[in-house]
Length: 116
Length: 113
Picture 1 (cartoon, rainbow over the protein chains, first blue to last red):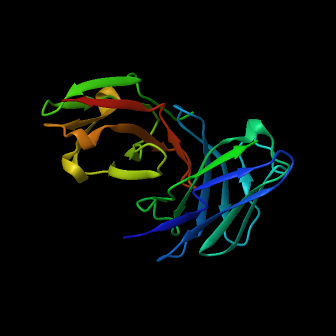
Picture 2 (cartoon, each protein chain N blue to C red):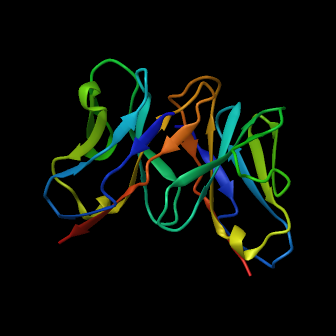
């Protein structure tokens, strides 16, 4: 089946630094990737939608200059949290789908970001 | 706007007992509905989905869900739970043509011996 690899699984960084999270589709071409944020014991909140070769579309309230998303190829999307602060600490999850097939959402295993 | 509601935040069930998780949606047309399961610190795994056709959908791990348009519901069921079913369960609906998923708040399932 479709597999999405997300790295790193855990990262601790100092306040003010930037962190990059990678999301790779291993065995299919992901034309669309989604990035979610999940606070403890809460649901997933969509941050942005990225299509290969296009600028990401951010949800209302998400700072695009803080959460930089790049989807340069059909198998890789990256989320960079710039100038991270403790309030950015969260669980970030990506998902990927191929074309218009809504049947095939595959989620990464998530990244636990802790900013100290 | 499309939305999905999971009325139960937390459910405790005995191992071997049946389980039903509620999901209600708000959508004008026929919705695309999903149930996902999440173990602690992990991503999401698809249990089953409904797009059209037979309103009783079979999924993995012995789960099934029934789409009831009259009640705007898509409840998840399992006849006999196992300790490994303890997890967080999310109902989700596609909200636009890009395929954005909107998730319910989730239901935490605890399985007791």
